[in-house]
Image 1 (cartoon, rainbow, N blue to C red):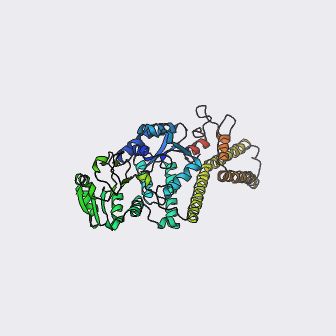
Image 2: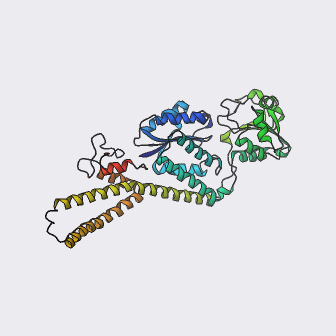
Image 3: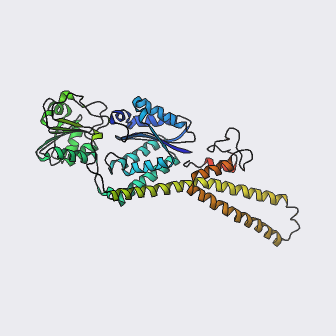
Length: 435
């Protein structure tokens, strides 16, 4: 089996394209089911956040990527130029960096860990998660936890809410400002915490009950969404963070000049203003909310070294697991040949004493053990140093009429489909690992 990843992220794809590609809830489950209907796809996980929409696949055929590409293109035809496909070490390293928060818009943000775990849970719920992707994502989640535990990144409370708050403080005196937070989810809660020292704090939502729930204990007043948009000019700072699929605020809602700061932290975007804004009203979308300063380079170097080590360990474990079936199948084959030869000369050995017969059997077994030990050592060394050597071993032992474990015509040339009736075939079919 091989692992593939295809998708877009904030590094090269603007929010104007990404916002139409966010798949959450039932839409995500339906997308997973569609992927799994393709016979070429064995496993799938979709990681969709405000910063990325990525599809991870396990398949024995490169053509499986075509199905994922078609799904992404259907979400937004404009996304095609931004697609990126990863596999092998590049894929593993990328996912580990994502899970650690290094590839986030706000470097080190904590939310991504929960988003990765949720993506795995959704794949498991639909039956799309199998051993290959489960192993990969478990390792990525462990790597993320280690980064947060062992480096300074884990000691910084990074989030888009905190960064938006810092940006606001660079422009206005928050202590003298009136703040409106639209939304009732996790980011809205964080915004209320970050801007709690504002002169006036208000939260609005379509559901008054939800707004009242997150306002409890914050001192914030509560408005309906209709009331908030009608009184928008009264606020100095407006923050939108909802799951709405259509705009919440438009240019017509802003009628007076600023200074006014508007932070749109939603994907899809909640604020659509075009060119009709009054003077002094500044709007920042999710791509404009960046960490204010780079972290210490030594700390980033430590993070990179930890991720490199984790990637190496993961690939080594997977390679060792992959070479295991080859070793077991070879040993089974050699033992079968030994027994066959002993059976062939059994009559000629009949005149031996019991001790002589025992010594003969022991000699043949020791000879095989000595020769097989060297082969095992070399195969394991190959697994740790060069995955292409494993491919060569699989091809040599599992393919062709002259190989030790021949396959039928239908499976010839495809190491992912060894002959089911051979020892190699039975063992290799039970193993799903990186190619």
